[in-house]
Amino acid sequence: MKQYYTPIALVLVLAGLFFLPWITPYFYIFIVTEILILGLFAASFNLIFGYTGMLSFGHAAFFGIGAYATAMLLQGAQWPLLACLLASIAAGTILALVIGFFSVRLNEVYFSMLTLAFGMMVFAVVHQWRSVTNGSDGIAGFQMGSLGLGFELALGNPSVYYYVVLFIVVIATAILYLICRSSFGLILRAIRQNPERVAFCGINVKSYRLAAFTVSGAFAGLAGGLMAPFLRIASPELVHWSMSAEPILMSILGGTGYFLGPFFGAGMFVLLETWITSMTHSWMLVLGIILALMVMFFRRGVLGTLLDRLQERK
Image (cartoon, rainbow, N blue to C red; front, side, top):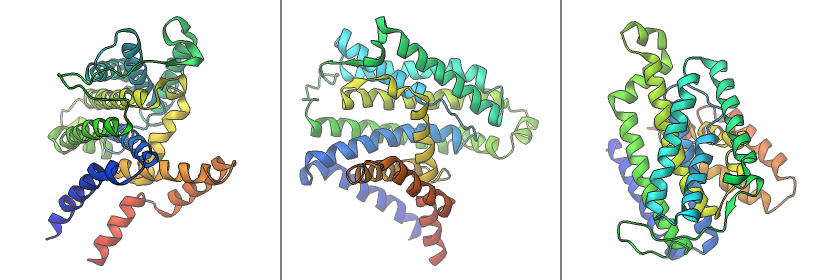
């Protein structure tokens, strides 16, 4: 019966998420909406980190470009939200393809430093190109129009937008899961473990790394496209290199070896940040200490460690 535990748990979690707006105030709806978006962002990063073994320090570039694409189209063209999200996916894909073309040629720390450099370049463009991005003020004041496909929803209502985010994140997560479980995903795991042996088998390792990097950028762009309407602004902070640390931390917290680990890590990160900031002004120090202890004592991530201990008891 062990194989049935995971599907049952997922069904229970999805049921709880579906009925959440019926039983909780708006504050918790905002919190869970943020967790879902950041969880998708972290899951997109984990495709190249946990599955392919590439540590990117510039992943916020794709997240931020997706946010700006949605905000600009909502403000300037009044596109339906779904069309804006498709544009954010396209923006993240193209940017990841360009950056990945140069970055995947390098390995380990050189790859990480090059992605960091590209991320800082994207931030500089966003911050200084005032005629397009409005500089440090960001793009705000856009109206939430229709969803698209004939659906007329009050997207300004937090509960309605929560359900839109939930539906899109579940679909995107299912697609990511299928990618990770496919032969493509198996090759990515093999590349992470031994790229030399994979190359010896006649597989073009750089092409697969570039494909994984591009797919990851597409899903990060989608997450950014969902974040802009949620925050009602697309600001340079979403593109800043420090934002790239969040998916890294979320993935490590939850467990990079587990598909749902990044979502678990995102939940822990957002909840801890919300709780600590309400108690002290030195929240960054307290949060840093707690996160450092978690990383030290939960070597496989919190979710990974808990699942391993449950397996040992059985």
